[in-house]
Amino acid sequence: MIHFLEKLSGTREYDIINGLDAVYGVIEERETAWKAASRVSCTNNCGTCCVAFEPDVLECEALYLALWLIENEPAAARAIRDRTYPMERKDNTSGCFLYDPDNPYHCTVYGGRCLICRLFGYTGSRGKDGNIRWKPCRFLPDLVLSARLPSLSHRQYEAEELRQLFDELPPVMSDSMEQALLISPDASGRTWPLREILPEAIQRMQFILLYNASNDTDPDRSTPESA
View (tube, helix red, strand yellow):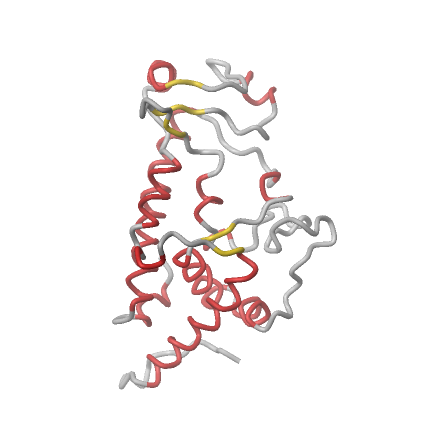
């Protein structure tokens, strides 16, 4: 939960971010159960999926990340808003600008990361018959998969086999995506490149926070720095 969320009370943005926070909570709960059952998780210091990829995001994702940055990384939020933040990396100009190759955790906005970043590697999909299927992340080393019991390989596993192996099914990526789309149906599922929409989302969040604070009669209520 983002603590600054309460400062948006009474706004459309509050409903959007609060709704997405609930979706993120369900994802975390389901993925925790799946990791425990499958005993498959990302290897330490990997981040390979972020190296050459930057997501296109829904409005709700951009607003959530914007508010998270304002609360947790205010200097970065201001730099991204003002477009003085480095939007290209020295190691890879086509990848996510929020990825840090020199940081062992790599993602600089992990707590506010976007939907696909939360889903990749720990979710399955549905076949034409609607049944859940799962394939291990392609970036997981073969040795990691073969070392677990029972051993796994880079192939697709169907629902019945997954139940036999793990007595559990993974969360489904498309299900979470559909839940996110329902949060702001007026946006019609439109997405934007992260580096294009995030500066505008930060500016929008800062304006609403300041507007709400100026109309607040509580003198002890803190106001996020915007300049």
